[in-house]
Image 1: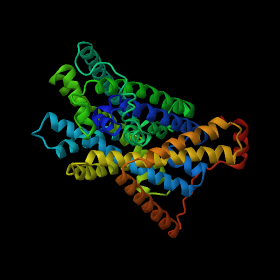
Image 2 (image 1 turned 180 degrees about the vertical axis):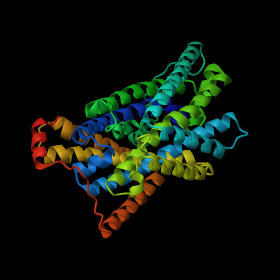
Image 3 (image 1 turned 120 degrees about the vertical axis):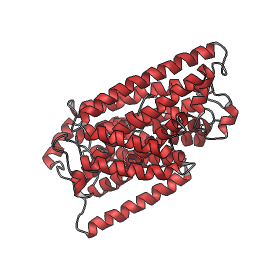
Image 4 (image 1 turned 90 degrees about the vertical axis):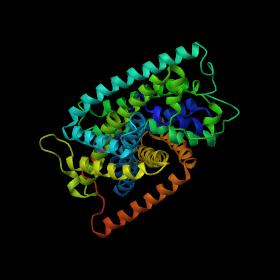
Length: 436
């Protein structure tokens, strides 16, 4: 999740939302704030790497955890592929003589090298990249607002927030199913709870703050871009990958188009993929540590204290899928839909985990935190999934079926899913009296 995440998918969200991308991002932020609240509850109960895989497995049952981890793998494994592809397409737009596949391999190699050096190196470079992205975003907003004041674009309007002529809930939730891609990544914070010096409370707080700050930035930039797009009506009928850069050109000319393109390439290809690779490697490590994936993925580098084998595997998968998607005209759209489908399914189970673990199993009297809020979050996400891309729904069900087969194989091999460190009955009674 980076400050300028909407740059690359603005045209897609604008088209799917009927010209109301601001509303799509607001609804997405609200939905995921409920999800962050459920994460905060579960990370307090189980402060372990593995995120929703651990929370579902320990909060409901190990087989449910396996299936949830399997679904979120669809999100986590494909996220780096999408980020590399978008960054490579942006760099190809700037340097057409270098093919997309070559840029993709370069980005993979750079990020793999950085992540193998350890988490501190990743943190330092991420901070530098965030500063660069905020600088570019501030430049776009200043130039864009000045252009609107000078009469360029379509003037100030509330239509990017709400337009009665194009609004319907199915249209809006279809757009939200794409817009949430910009927020995907906040959940990766929970993957680092074992490496956080502030413990589970800090992790839960960090997720909420990250969502609110990102939501504010996303809403502001898509609102300004919506008022500057050259052909709003024409954009409704197509999924333009250059819509944001076209708006930047209206605001400041070709130099601003190139600046925003470069920022997209570097932020998606380096900053975003760096932390995405960190998150998925920790998920693979956590599942392998629990003997639900091959044991070589649980190997930790003695020198740098990172799951080195998992990082290398993610890199190889990213290259393979990325090169395949380079050859498809709908590669970005397809990967976006698949990633969001995996994430939304996993988030739905996360909310259910809170209800089962706290409300049903422990009899918590915190009705809002442990029952009402998770139910609201589940309801919103179910509507998003129902209105998502049909192909993504089909592939998501196929992936779920493959997970069921994998689970059956584990049972047949005598490797029934089981998680170490399940809370004792005494611990459950204690937690019942002190549940947050």
